[in-house]
Length: 274
Image 1 (cartoon, rainbow, N blue to C red):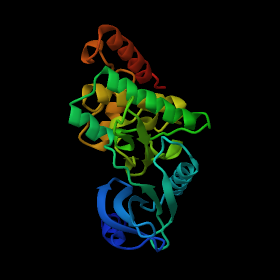
Image 2: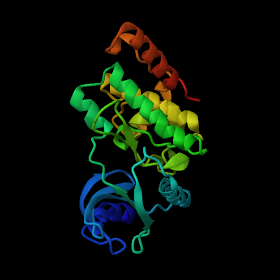
Image 3: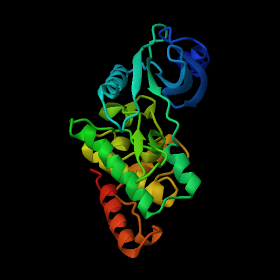
């Protein structure tokens, strides 16, 4: 209907239109079911930035959830978070927008694919840095709730262990399934959903730990934990497979002792599903 038509046209309407008289979207990078991600220019500082626009939802609770998530990201001050520069509600189209500093480091998908999977050492370094990032949130009674490889960036190694930055903190409300009259809706790719996210249950700190397990699985195996041709099939795969997928020590490259320890740890994270 008209809603889906306006959704399809939205990117073209936003392109080359200044937001707040300052941010100019120049090209569309990614379109998900609700979020549009643009490369943009901050005309005040003349620096490239990322602009995310969340299309207005007729579901009030979803619209509130987006606003809360963006505000939460704006309040977090952490060396592990990609800084959120500004946010607001679009005066003409009514959707929430936010501007993030542009990260030149590769995201975890690019990083893992370029190496054909990671070894024991690299995986451990990234997991340790992720723990530090999540600790900042969890100690403040917040959760990330949206861990997936496109939201984790691996900083170029200067010296010492690999370090990461995380983005897209949507928190507990939004990155799970919402049931509507037309079936199950999700606002992001469910390939890295935990059981709580796929079944629409309440999320907590354990959800982030299970999410870390799924990221570790991806890093070590260079393949996604769950697959399905449609969103619906994928969600079913998550619900059935959660708590069952495991890493075997022999699938990890490293010394015998390291491999066994890491497999045990990753499998503990993967079993943290309600």
